[in-house]
Length: 265
Image 1 (cartoon, one colour):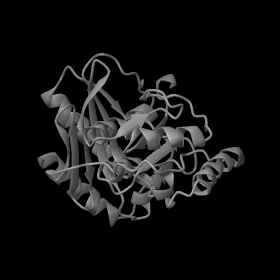
Image 2 (cartoon, helix red, strand yellow; image 1 turned 90 degrees about the horizontal axis):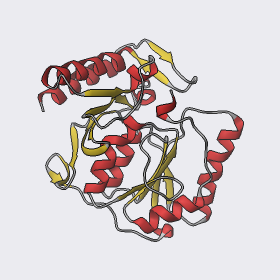
Image 3 (cartoon, helix red, strand yellow; image 1 turned 30 degrees about the horizontal axis):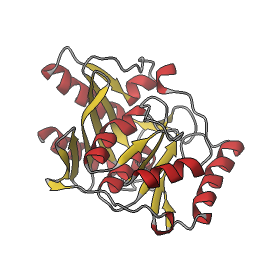
Image 4 (tube, helix red, strand yellow; image 1 turned 90 degrees about the vertical axis):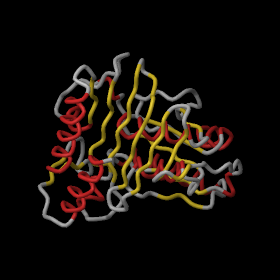
């Protein structure tokens, strides 16, 4: 808990300050000095306690580290999810830490930095927000659903056409609405809490998904591949929902936007 209080102070302070911003895969894929600082802090604290464990982290991967999930105990880290929000001082910003053993996700922690909400989930032991148990929506009818998504870093005309086309398909199916909040991990936490009924995205990464997947499953939800098959953590695509019926409906409706796998870097 102490590390999250420290991260809250660091990120809350950095939100008010001028930032050194650079880009990664596209002009919309941003990174700041705070991303690097927070990632290094988390890894150093965990390495001191668990020296034999492996790490997959967003900025280390961007700098060239291999993104390969093995059977070894592995921490999967997104130091600042919602970096574009962070740059613009839009307060939907989170830190996400997942943990896997034998390629099985065991627990996840997501900290909503500006609201001091700590989302946690452990396999077989439930999901919580600040110690309050989480429960997904059990909605199966798309015409009564609020759906969340994110745009992804690719903004070429063909990708944007597919992205907007997917939203159009769901709105034509009479969904109540589609929302984009700028943080994949917090959107997935809203799903886990029952504030939304489904989520889908192409172009997110294993560090966006690892912790949130445990939290959603422990809150009673479903997390699958956009093909309708089992989740592939490295595939950069996902559909999640409170019910399997809702998840499968969305998987069947949306068209694929192709991204390179995380483990192909």
